[in-house]
Length: 158
Image 1: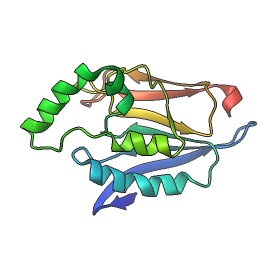
Image 2 (image 1 turned 90 degrees about the vertical axis):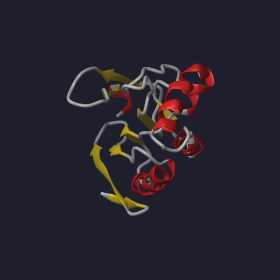
Image 3 (image 1 turned 30 degrees about the vertical axis):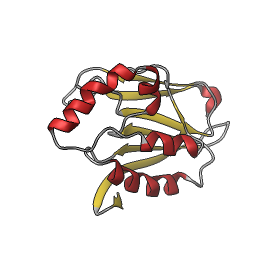
């Protein structure tokens, strides 16, 4: 666990030893209401991963990737309305901008497969130091308001 703005966030790091280099994987679940809190939770996780040249960051970011709304701006209206009704902050793209500016690449960045009830993709997979043979898919069903996501990494990547 790491702490960001007095909120504890779950992170499960693990490593995979491979013939093409080790990969560190971190599964995360960030705050569901505040991008400011999510940003404070994310930074210690990135610091934890920093020593590894190859890593995968996957899980429930509860944050909107900017690429989904650059190419599909009509998708932003329902989530903006929901956030206004619930007195949450307006949609923000700080997490995806931060990850992108720090050398991360979102897997399936042009896919826009929704992973939650609002039709948005708040569950994501980000990689750093990995090639292009990494893929993700939403796994439908289960006891949550989100779909799980699965990351597949080709043998040549590990």
